[in-house]
Structure formats: structure tokens, C-alpha cells
Length: 282
Image 1 (cartoon, one colour):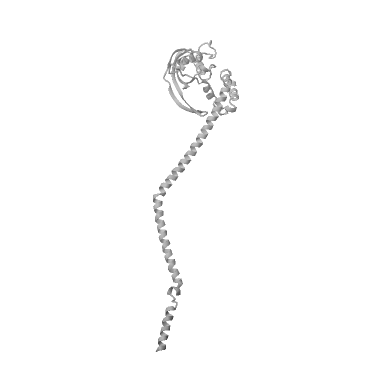
Image 2: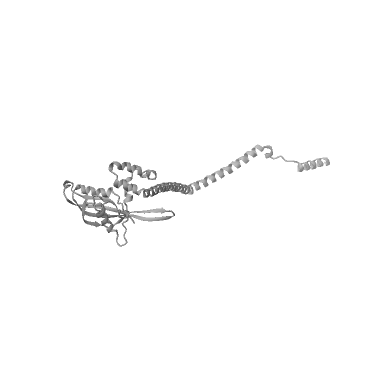
């Protein structure tokens, strides 16, 4: 009995100090599979959460962001086009300004070409002038002539300088030889009516670092002139379109709007209404 008791006590003591092996130690693969399943489940939850967040962001913020981006790109493209257009306009104005300066330098040659050169030689004369800085006006000689014909019709006491208009018509345009004040008249002025001027175009230009603003004005003029025959009428029209007055202060740029002339009675004396428009800067 004593031995049995000692044996029992020994077994109990050994049980207390024995190392136990769990089922997990016996089957580690099963434990790894369980961990993988847990991790996969967590990732699925994360993916679902991310999808929900992406959907919220995509439907709430992205359309506005996309619209703002498109507007920014469109505004940028528009600014680029405007800048290119301004550069082109600046280059054009710069070229025209150089041409204007050159016209002032060769004014005497242009006046001689228009007033004193025969029609047969005029084309060659024009070609010899419109070179260098004037190449841009090679096909616009009439524009050059109009620029030189432009005069100042501003008056301190009147809306328009009516005395200058009267002198221009009587002293130059109604003369067979407009540069000769002793020349016979091609027509007799019976009456002139000058209407109120109006602004044709507002113009702004840069002069160095200063901006200059002025208006291109037009003044309708109706004149009643008696012509002896069609040749006198033609001379009058030629004086307006193809003559540059030598005295710069007396120049006026006109366009002929209407002439009420009976061509069937071209060899008879006629009272003719001539509608003109005078242009000037103010």
C-alpha cells in the first residue's frame, strides 16, 4: 500500500510538471488557414469601405472638379488665343505705323505722282514709291492718297469748319486746273448745305506709354452746282478722287455718295445736286 501510494504521488507530481501539446500544435496548418480567412475578411471590409468612399467622392466632388478643370482649360485656351490675336494686331499696327512715317517722308513724291504724272506713267510712278516700308500698301495706293487728303475740319466757333469747306469747293474742286487759282471754273456753286457731323468710329492708339483717343467723324454735304456739260462734271469728280491739294491746311477727304445728273442731256447746262461725305478726325 505504501508503494502504491508513492507511485500515485509520483504520477500526480509528473502530471503537474508535464508539457501539454495542444490541438493547434498538432495541426499548425489549420491555424494558418484560420488566420488567412480572418485577414481576407478584413481586406474585403476595407475594399467595401473604399468603394463606398470612392462612390461618394465620385458622385459628389468629381463632377464639380471635372467641370472646374474643363473651365480652367477653356479659359486658358481662350487667353492664349487672345494673346496671339493681340500680338498679331500689335505687329500689324507697328507695320502700319512705319508705313505712315514713311508716307510723310515721301509726301512730295506722292503728290507729284498723283497730280503731275500722266496716266500712262502713273503705274510706274506708284510702283517706285510703294517699296521698302510701304510694301504693305503695294495694292492700296488709293488708301495712301486718302490719307494725304485727310484734313482737319474742327472749329472753335462752329460744329464744323464751314469756311474751309466753301474754300475747298470753290478754290480747288470747281476749277479745271485746281492748282491754278486763275483757272476757269468747271462749275458754279449755287448752294451748299452742311449737315451735322457724326462719329463713324472711335479709335484708341498707344503713343509710347500714353493712350490717345479720338474719333473719325463724317459730315454729310449737299452742294448744288451748275455744270456746262459732262466734261466739266467729270473734271469735278476727278478733282475729288484724283487730286491732292498742295496746301495741307486746305485738304479735305470726300467720298461721292450721289450725283443727280441727266446723262441724256450731257451736252447741256445742268443744275446738279452732288451729295458728298467729308471725313476728319476729332
